[in-house]
Length: 253
Image (cartoon, rainbow, N blue to C red; front, side):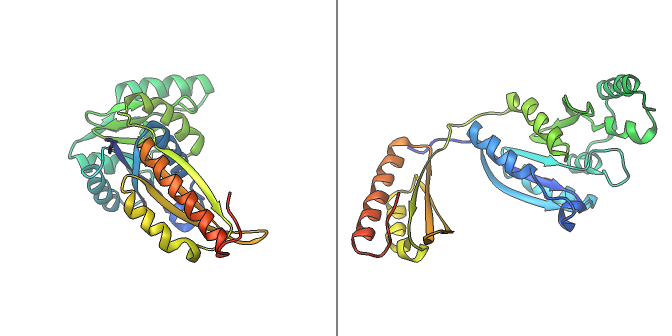
């Protein structure tokens, strides 16, 4: 039986990602994290530091999915415009959050830094937002509605996800099993399609790679339904045995 799961999207914000200067590490972390929580990540987008582009992407995603997670653009510089864009998307004003101001003033005093205007920009949040604690560098992220706004620095974002997790509705975990076929995708495509059609509650993925012995393919089966997964897995094993017997593949494991 199909089981309900919350859905999510990730919005990666920053010119540096699109230019290739920064290699994103956040999407993979968030995807893995949400999988453990039983939340299905359905979409990811990358947008430049352009307010209207951020607003358009955010408004499209937040009505489509249970949760949206953004990374990047909440620092102290002129191109950190995520907070302003989020406020515009929700149609609310933005101002310094009193608790965020207190956190930053205390932190800057402790480390001997001037709480100048640029640094205090990191205390600005849309009206109605709640803070996401930042145990690493103190400048908080924030949540408004179903949108979680987090830092782009991976170490900080990872810590913020730990703070966010208790706020999230969880679904049944996705179970996964893998078989490796010593042969190319073309050798398994037809019988695998037949198995997929008989197993609508199982997602079957085919991922080719080159092994020391030649072309090979990982077949990954994923489902929240343990019984359906077991049935499909047995069929895939039987397919592997038959293909090996017929000499179409070199073997399987």
